[in-house]
Amino acid sequence: MQINIHFSGGKRSDFGNHDFERVLAGSLERFERRLKSAHLYITDVNGPKGGIDKHCRCVLHLRRMSPIVIQDQDASMNALLYRVANRASYALTQKVDRRNKRKRERVREYLMEPVSD
Image (cartoon, rainbow, N blue to C red; front, side, top):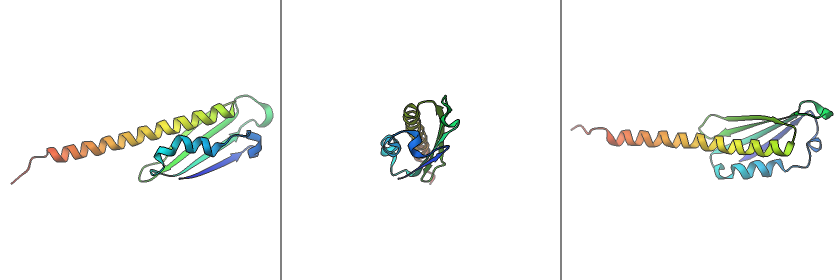
């Protein structure tokens, strides 16, 4: 899985000393074979003014499934990063579970079809 981090509205150093890759990879590691790439877009909306101005968008590109997009905003970069990582993991879990459920239902329907002679 490839993780790309994109910053706008400031340099990486302006967003604090966070290990963005480690947090996101740790949250998504169990889905590594299903993920092609993860892109994290971090923006400081107001610049140095303060307030709820840090915006984060996470885009997960999956193998044979549509992408998942998670967006959130907060004043604390640390809280924002962990919340987006947790939401990404939850959304991916839900999507994989729904897909597996549909597969099981199709197999069950196939097995229950009457056999014609």
